[in-house]
Image (cartoon, rainbow, N blue to C red; front, side, top):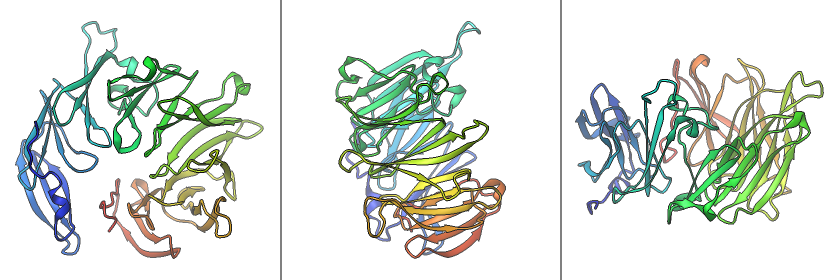
Length: 404
């Protein structure tokens, strides 16, 4: 059983600093981020702490390490004691559930017959007790449906967690089905998978046990594409929208689960090109009303989309590189709370990625990689630029969790 040491001790830091971790060579260091002093302070350092990578748990309670024999979690005030081990030989990938109750570990093993697919082993551990709650074994093909492909073609994470921080449900995409499990018994809800012909993608609400799923069009358009919202555990369909002439769909949830944006790429009448529109679902309103949003120039290519965390606004980068436009919208217009409205469009920005502050209100308009690291800090309340900066060849941007 885990130690009684305070694993949230860093939250009581009198300067309200946050910790971050850096791995370089064989060393791993946990440091305080002191933004006011523009310097760091070492909390803990260790050589050969992990054999491949380290990973914070979603709420920052644990730091996980990966080893030949399995994974381990560490934590504490400033000592980083080992709290628990999870035995899984040759583990390659790990994933925590959002509420940190469970740890999923993955390994893939070469088959003895070279014509067979790799064998995959997935374990789900109880983080606190280290006990395996359930394992999944099979050929790699069984775990590669949907998703962007992780290691050796397996879409990682294989299981996606639903229902917010409760960690009550997890689900996996299969052929013509979505398998939804509950964590009380670790068995399928109703002992059977949710049958959905030709389903290619699904996404949980970040806060509620609601699945959004996408089925592409079939039979050359005889059967339209559709997006459907399904309540769990009842499996009742709350809302569905048929989409015609759709070539592709992406789903974006707002962090409170209040809104879902579905980006739909549609064919023009000639089918020679596509244009993009958004279907905006108001999840918390009666009967889940849907609004259709098309940009002023509906032929603009969509480069990026991002919701304001905990907010009602979103940003879209659209148009042609190297100088696309950025538009801001609100799900509430000043005179009508149930209508989407445009706040402003910034013309010709060197940006291809959007990073909202975790606290909302501020956003970084970033030109990553080939855009030479142009950064613009923008205040969406005032609709004005606060600062510009450059970080040549920047590839990633991460806000401090406080948004400061």
